[in-house]
Image (cartoon, rainbow, N blue to C red; front, side, top):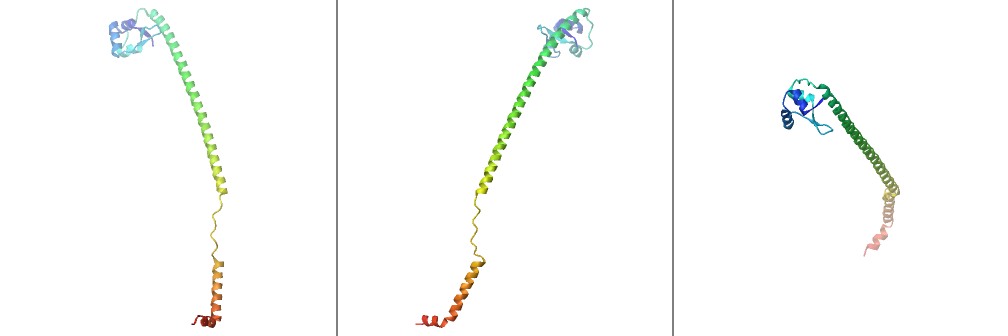
Length: 168
C-alpha cells in the first residue's frame, strides 16, 4: 500500500497530527522510517486503526512522494535480500565443510578400527594352542592292570619262598 507522512496520514484519517504521533508512541499505530529519516505510515495501518480514510486533494504530490519512497524501500529490500543470500551461502559453505570434516573423521576412525581388528586377528593366530592334558586314558590303565596281574601271578607262583623269607 501507499506510505504517507505524518501530516498526510492525519489529513486522510481525519485526526490531528498530534493524535497520529500519540498513537505511534502508544504502539496502536506502527510507523517506519524512510531513507531520508522521515516517519512514514502505511495506509493499511491507518485503515486498521482509524477505519475508512478520506481522499486527499493533492493526490499527485503524494503519489510522487510515494513512488520515491517505494523506490527507496525496494532498494533497501534488495540490499536485505542480498545480505540474506550471502548469509545463506556462507552457512551452506560451512555446512559443506563440516560434512567433509565429518566424512574424513569417519574414514580415519574406520581405518583405525580395521587396523585394530587386523592386529587382533594376527595375535590370535600367533597364540599357541592350549597344552593338551597327558593321555592317562586307556594305555596307562592297561599298563597298570598288566603290571598288577604280573605281580599277582608272581606272588602266587613264588608264594612259598615269600612266606619263608618273611617268617622268623
